[in-house]
Image (cartoon, helix red, strand yellow):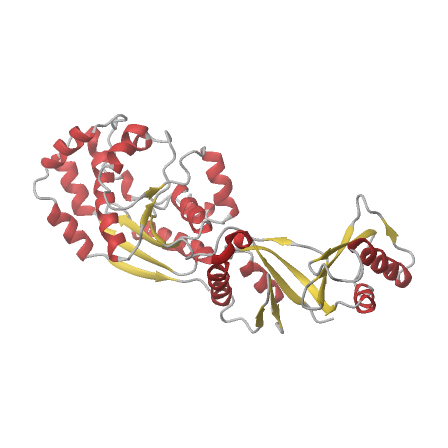
Length: 385
């Protein structure tokens, strides 16, 4: 038997007159995902096919990470003739008990779903008389999907995929990628809702090592398996942090550092045509993530929203997603990021905008510091597939 892979999409059914836009984007993302693999792709009505391939395992591995795909199945395709269907199901290897389930997208088909299942089940028993049917708790399920184009798919399993919306369908956002557990998870969650991602990372060499920077590059590469290519902007942040350490009160250092990060991120987002910022903040997790701290940080960004998809999660929920998307082992590598540089003993947990602005005035003309950091940025293009 020559297998094909069926691709089923997720929420695109709900898009009404705009559905064509989402379908086209999903098709483009599937093509990019399978780039470099010897195969053919056919895009039909609500079912896409991959065929004439050799590396089935790699194709399934990649398709499971494409946002917008609900599930995939390795299947046989035949004419939607009941004799053809029965002949095809007889070729499947079945161990233990089984049942047959039929879906009829073609409501004009002359047999009901129950009748198709009964005839196919009878054909299986005719070819393998020692098998037994169990409609309540079968060990094997044979699925028959009769389509409107006169063909039928026969398959055993549905493999769950990433779901969500096609990347790029909701615009583009800039992810503040720190190297910890939270920010990669935040990026993953927003990409699942259709955002194309770029990323920004702040590094403070020599206080932070090149290994810390490489860790972030590695995280971006893992994310790119789900999001497609990512342009990672690396900002030299040492000079800014040294000035803050020298001029500002120690308990306000983290607050001022984060406000500077947001200033720079907003400017870079505009340069990259991004419409929002994304970070991994979780309410109350650390001193810089209290309601007051988030308010003072938000005050800096004037032209775009800041998305915080982890805001209501506890740490274990974030860890569970990090394990699922394979960023966990990289995120916990012991290389410190710039947020740990000059860390005060008692950071303020209830900062005010007025006090933050007062501390920043002690820095003098800090616009030059920001411009210099952006001018010296490094952009790394990351693309896994």
